[in-house]
Length: 288
Image 1 (cartoon, rainbow, N blue to C red):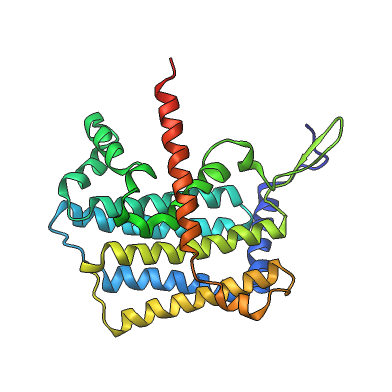
Image 2 (cartoon, rainbow, N blue to C red; image 1 turned 135 degrees about the horizontal axis):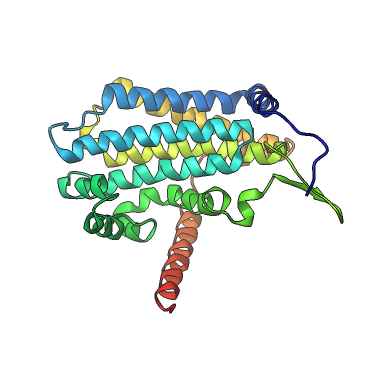
């Protein structure tokens, strides 16, 4: 491998800044939806979420909620900058935090497993058995998490692990004597795809949190207005994304249907994910 130029860190920083400005300007509805998700997260967590902070699980739920929000922010900023694989890594962590919320709900015992897992092997074993994604979430009660877990599956391959997929967009071209790479990614279509996905996943995180912590969220007219507005904003962003990615050829009736999750397809893909993961674990257990 060789390179004809040696960019400085400031040059890389300029590339990242230019990507952020470019995609904010060319996709106003996506930008508006991202801000709506951001403001909704902040308002829900600071004004409406009232966990019992005199309990271990209440404190941990607050930590997990903030962890999910801050990780989503990281995912969004990396995506719009062209740092696609890093965006997937952060989105994966945001999803983990929300899934763990569902498991530690009203359980001081499980919340302590989460707290102590780093240094306490027994706590780590119990935490892993209780909270492993996706196999610990097969039951019907966790169905609402399935869209997020499908994103989690993608994040494993496209960001979290050092596989071929995590380099997509960085590999530019090659010849007999040279391979060219680009940083950050300068493929507009790929950046738009991941940038959009991070926003849509942000809404899914909010909806899942609302489902998990409903008992401890103060749901007044203001709250209902927030959730309605962010849903509508993301619907408009989805229409804009599909128009942009399909050269404005999508019929109006199809655009009207965008924003509604295809639950049948989600369930099929989730079941395939479970089968693959259980098969992998069985295969691992047979290795010597």
